[in-house]
Length: 233
Ligand code: ADE
Image 1: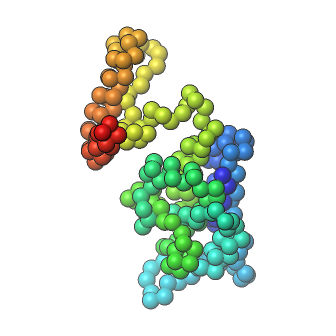
Image 2: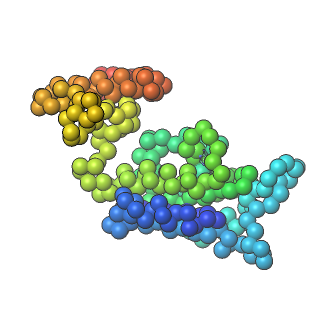
Image 3: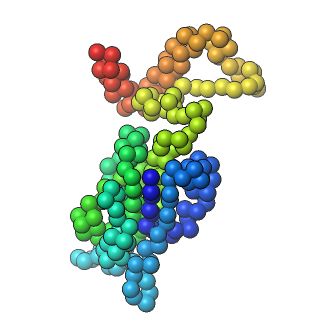
């Protein structure tokens, strides 16, 4: 997969992508990640990427010209342009899985009060929100999406780290896990996990996952049970 990130702050990506799973995926050539400075596509003395909104109103808007030039210089036959923004579809694990199928992702990180509407229209950008809150710009959101997608690419996680049983892989939150010591500050590892009975452990884990999901994310529980029933029938 190739990922291009158009931003006015390319340097903010260097740290997060230089560590751990993403860095390993880059090293293994599973993904190539490039940051592109939007200001390189401006033609004025001040390298300006924003301007006042027509009709008035507070703040500045990202101008369409440098954005179109940047995207057009990067676009390939199989590319998908993603516009992180609080007004987009909400990003979920399902979206992450879908995006693993795309060969080339181009992230367009907005800043200021917003982006000229012609960017959405003219570049057929898929607007994605990482949650119902407003960030100062799209950079952190792009990092979140890149992280969630790249870790799912084949070969990125080893079998031990593989996400098969983790939260959301079957629409339930993850069951509690424990490592040594058996007793820590008076808190004991549940007996069932020490029993060696894999059937019992499986049942306990599922029950814990359902209980936790009911408590913390009741909105997930109905679809998860419905999905399970449909799979069985
Ligand atoms: N930019 C600002 N807020 C955002 C959000 N919630 N998701 C994605 N991009 C954003």
